[in-house]
Length: 210
Image (cartoon, rainbow, N blue to C red):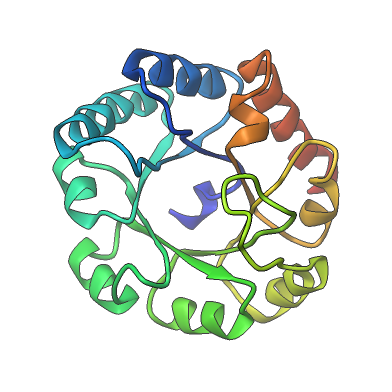
């Protein structure tokens, strides 16, 4: 499934209202986004399950991928397409064994190419570097330079994802460096027209990935 790992990668924002969240993600999907990660650090587990199930139904209608942040059990429960794990979220090799060969496994590698090489060897389908730019979501995150993305593109075989502080105005150098996925929260979901913003991101890939 790695060939589907391309374009805008929408990561869900923290949102108190479930229906508002679904409307926002639906708008991103209408705009052409085909990869969504459910990330929820605040809701109680019953609400997280309800949101994940609703997002599974929503993404399925658009033939889009749904990945779950940090939670293998939740991903299995709702039939998600895979999980994304940080460095403190358990063994990637164990996660791959649990997921089987057909589910997607993503790994956060921050600004560390060696970690990405280990993640690829452990079975990750894509690796994420960031923060690409100063991020309002994780202001303490180390910065991953454009040079790192160039090196990763040359030394890894799995798709590369950039995350952190990405906007339409600063995304182009990352795509030019070889990133397959741009993971975006704030610049997408704070846009006055989420669908139009998603379309604009997808257009960037068409322009610079030719």
